[in-house]
Length: 263
Length: 269
Image 1 (cartoon, rainbow over the protein chains, first blue to last red):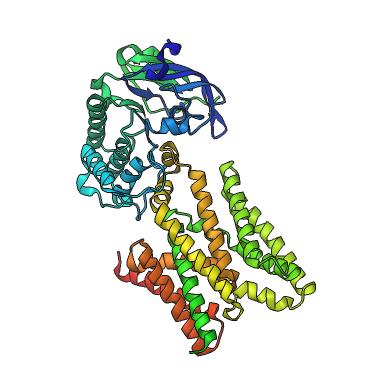
Image 2 (spheres, each protein chain N blue to C red):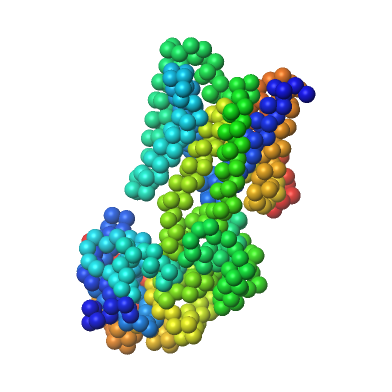
């Protein structure tokens, strides 16, 4: 299965990776065949961010093999970066009073080009189209530090759309958003997936907003515990492995926010 | 007008342009604090440069300052990259520079001729020591820094927003940070002779604070206007009072920043 995917999908084979001196991934293997809309689900500390960083080439695995559309994320970073759009975990960016949404989106596009990188009419058009796609066309001249969390997420997504990516890797995009913003963002991602054929991998703690898109779910807690359709993966037995404090009361399953078990 | 006065005026105008442009680069790349952390290193670099210049007679102090600053910047960057705590790194480099400072001072005072005046020149600078070739070097540095800004303005803003995002987008973030360190080092090496090492680091920060607090905007022309105004007024005041230029520029800078912060506090929210 893994060997057959080649350039049409993602292969992760027996990957081990550490983050902040902790072993965050142990023998992680899975494969996704394009087109896919996939959710990485697991508790805090389960290795979701580590896995995304490995896929995008920001972190070198200790062991194992990773292929994204046939490219090695570490050694073929330049080729892969033209195909991938990455949304960092909320709170890790430094939105400032001197970078406008327009600049961010322009750089999303221009970073696929060689320097010198100047904003031409062509770039302006790409910026306008990308901002329109995420509903931020009226805020193009706003500075990033004046945006709400939802607007900032959409601005970064616009900067990735500008690159016409084949794959969006999103690290906790729904975190720190209010309910409506979560729904809007989930809808936007589905629209990109359906209308533009963008493959999506999104780490999340919650699946409510994406449930009716019937995503592929990768349940992870350092190891991949299960992956497949929601119906196949989200069983009480699987969830019990991922979330140690899961409880059942009078036939109800209560899944509390949890942390990965330290070893 | 006296040639020496004109030479001095040209020096402070060029130095003001360097500080303003560098301040802009450091602001948009969010590395201002990093530059201030290097103040110990700049003092050490200037004294070490003066020692080498005096001892060899051929190696200009600007070259030594550039190499020393670049080495320390690179050392800090690489240690932080290897997850050494930033506080420890700064403590280490400050200690290293303190040792170099003391050793260089000892060498200047006891080994080289005119050591004390050379040491004082490295610490607080002197318009009188500036030569036409220093001015040429300053002009080249101004052009170099402005060129860097014109070509890499968007990139600096982008990497400062999120280095991981920039890396994932295909930019060589490390190379851009080294470009910033090189720009900082070359700018400081060009201005130490005029303003001295003690004040030079601070002058990098002041136009930035002025621009942000008084004008509430981060744009290169505003930086240039504030930097040139501060430098020129400081120089003219020093001529009137017949005192040290760097002292007057420092006092004027501090006054402008204090005024800006006060006005912002009173009216600007």
